[in-house]
Length: 450
Ligand SMILES: Cc1cc2nc3c(=O)[nH]c(=O)nc-3n(C[C@H](O)[C@H](O)[C@H](O)COP(=O)(O)O)c2cc1C
Image (tube, rainbow, N blue to C red; front, side, top):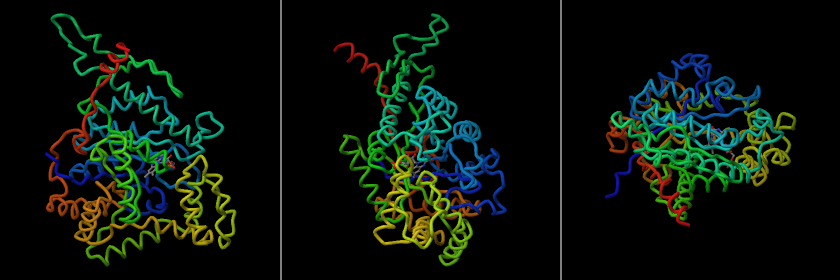
């Protein structure tokens, strides 16, 4: 029997303002310390849970400059934050962004498995390789890894984490007071991994959770990134500016997964969007325009354009001269896919730096702006056209998030697109992705027989 295809909703919390939202914190409804205020997070995540959202999604980075957006300048570390949210909520999934470039597999696998148990099976890991090249200097390295190394490490890191999460079989702990047997040692498996990037003996000192192991998200858009997502991802975090772009990405990832022998329905595609809901379509368009004019000045946008290019400073160039293509060199170990896209657009259309900045500001424009009815129609259109399996919604202005949960979600529910109540208790359950089998015992048996 095929499962009813259901829309998924995530909440992205960017407190006092993420990329493109440098002045968001001026909204009097947002506390000035929102990004480091646990009460603020608990409140907004409980709103999402009351609206039956699948998950809350915490983005992260470990490098700032004075030009970074306010949320990035001063924010809570994701795993610590999610552990606090785990005990303040009961159903919503808890997804954090953790880099494979500046973590050790044993340590991260352990902390994620702990979150998965604390939350009773609601943990998720957004696997990234760190786009901010300067992060290297915070970890004693002269420069960030090149792409091949970044993504080679990422694949091996995931394999190690999954191997560690399978250290114990489900019935490894008899905890039998009569016989005095706590552990059945035959059900405990070391990893003994010796790879190109990591050597990890294992086993991990923590059992599996009600969802087996944390849900794997992936975000990274290069060929390397897409292949990683298609191979390991239970879900993909991405951006889509138009329905056609969304459809192309969706088909691409599902095609790559199918080519690897995976069931494409087992990968959930969740692009991130801001949503503006007004009393009428015109009212929403007005609100959206007002915020886009005020969230970010042109000067802030010029400085922020540098992020994809390893925080290269574009203020040194003449704004009305052709876009300085030599800047792409600085993106080689940073957000190269995004920087290349911007550079190609500028060169193919002969844009000046000023025009390039204006065009990249336009790319923040959301396709989901209108009355509640219009926004619900748009979401249904994108979902039906397979441009997405769900939306990761940037909470933005608190009044707007309330309008979404109170006005749009009931329409999606009435149309049978979105759940009216939780029917599952784990994040895998909400997303409809299966619990991975613990294959360690079978693998070891096969190795022994060789
Ligand atoms: C939608 C999206 C969200 C991302 N979120 C994060 C993030 O929160 N933290 C981070 O370090 N990197 C994030 N990344 C970037 C990855 O770290 C990746 O290294 C970067 O995009 C460059 O790789 P790529 O060329 O494969 O995209 C994100 C990427 C995408 C596409």
